Length: 260
Image 1 (cartoon, rainbow, N blue to C red):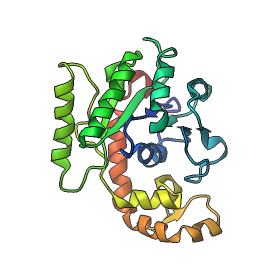
Image 2 (cartoon, one colour):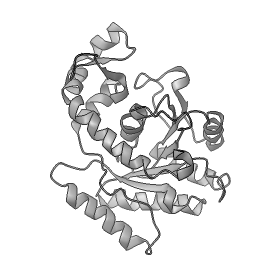
Image 3 (spheres, one colour):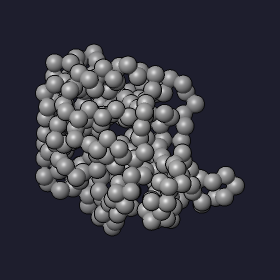
Image 4 (spheres, rainbow, N blue to C red):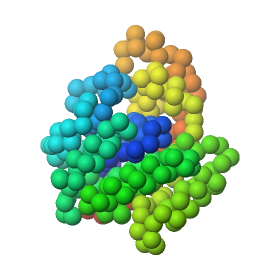
């Protein structure tokens, strides 16, 4: 999906003090494919070669230099920005933004915290949300997004997330939770990560509905990634529309000023 509005440049930060909850999956498979020419910012010990990102598409900040990340966010004000904060540096990031964020400017439009129904993930997600709010981020800019939801357990998982928020926060406070959107548990995400491909790397072949090809990839790279690509192509007709629906719902939580 591409947005016709040239002013549509949302700044989205994905973070959680819990590991394995789907932060990078959101960055590369939920937000990157449906935003036009986004800048990807990865903070923490990420491999600098992944998902065919290169050049001006991504910056890797290996340590916890919060100032560097925020400067890049400001420098690229004319592009969407997706920041993925690795669990190892979340605490340092949250400590750093306390001196940078103000009630008038928290640099990002939306802070997305993926959470699973696991008590540890929920606890660490709420810890993250509390620290963001203490750093001047309004509750209406903090979103809990249920992730790694197992098939058949969708209702129970969403109920667990909502109940945990009701139990932890006073009425009218706490992070937002989508009405319907969640990210399912799908082994194809692990296959894609291992092969270094994501949804944005494939495009539908013109005049051949249901057939997909790599974008801007060498034949050699395509050959090496063939097994994962075959599996991905088989799921694209289901997975991409599903992710786009969740993306559209998440975008409704952006502040009005960033959607205009």
